[in-house]
Image (cartoon, rainbow, N blue to C red; front, side, top):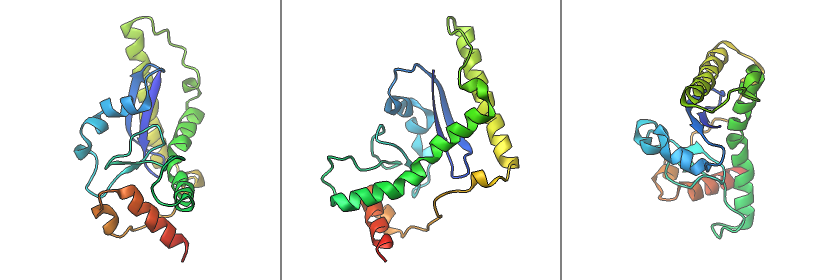
Length: 177
């Protein structure tokens, strides 16, 4: 069973989609999720989430540049991808923290042979997500600090049609100063 989450910098789960079979592609799960179907309910004009290369690049999902991309120079793409990865990896940190807290999620012992068992499994995972967020709120460990810095990006990044290119140019110009 697959679970897809959107988390913030402090590893709080902001949206979870639970219950797809393991063979379903991540992009399909996202497209059919509440956040994928109605992004306007979740994002302000100047917001996006960091996704990996399994997701399509769009207004609300910024992804790394692919190796075969011809956008920007190889140097700028590599530099952006390295910078970008520290934000994108937060979701992996969140999954790790969730499974560390609730080891039952590492190997669920539900037989998914009928609808009731399937629903119980989904409810169990959701309960773990809710408890995880409660613990995150009360846990002030250094583990929750963001590896990346908080940056006020200039407005022109959001006004351009291609936010990823604008963001990559910003990162490269900022890093070279």
